Amino acid sequence: MNILSNLLSQPAQPSSKRQRRGIEIKSPREIDIMRQSAKIVATVLKEISELVQPGMTTADLDAYAEKRIREMGATPSFKGYHGFTGSICSSINNEVVHGIPSPKKVIRAGDVLKVDTGAFFQGFHGDSCITIAVGEVTADAAKLIRVAEEALFKGIEQVKAGAYLLDIAGAIEDHVKGNGFSIVEDFTGHGVGRNLHEEPSVFNFRTREMPNVKLRSGMTLAIEPILNAGSKFTRTLSDRWTAVTVDNSLSAQFEHTVLVTESGYEILTDRTKL
Image 1 (cartoon, rainbow, N blue to C red):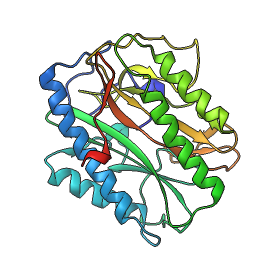
Image 2 (image 1 turned 90 degrees about the vertical axis):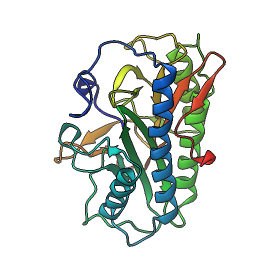
Image 3 (image 1 turned 180 degrees about the horizontal axis):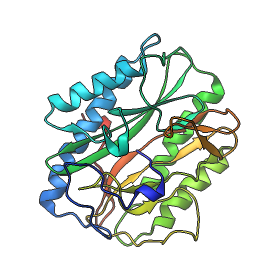
Image 4 (image 1 turned 60 degrees about the vertical axis):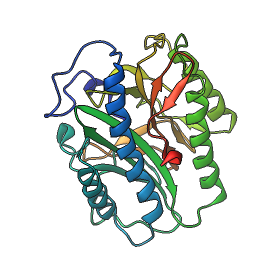
């Protein structure tokens, strides 16, 4: 889940501990728990990608996600988070992030559907997002989705102890812009663990506005590039959550919770290993 930067310093969930300052290095025990919370998230997203079809509503997907998260012994990370009403963020086409599930929002063939969810298990969060091509989409939409997922892995490939956040950002930015798309700069990735949003901010573009943090083994990061087919700029709707593209262009996003290791990385929300 992306969130505006001014929320990063606030408590992530009523049931979690008080927000800690600085970057947390997880212990082996904590990492084992995060593997479980992340697996729950990966399972739910994989199942949703297989069941979604035209005619369903985003509220249908939300109800399914909440049911499955709770069945696996966790609670939805997003529900109640700063007043958010859903267990998933469901954003369609020009909706960039934070779409609120609704029984009035019907999923149609050709839609570009972003589904983002999190699970809180034994004190730790997992967080991940996928973009789903609903039925047959246009060639341009298919390329946007493909490049968004490729950009995520370009960033992840830079992860290892001793690397820097700017290494991740640069790899993502180069791939996105090289394919003719823009990177949304209003939202970033983040640390994740005891709180849904922790330090550091994990940006997807080169910048001097945020610290270029050196990665250390035991850090857990939510890396999540967001691509627009047109302008990088967004605006927030009157519901105060849903961000949309200013030019009505399509948007796509992928996200994984990633563990930094001495030799590289471990994708905790890897759906391919289920």
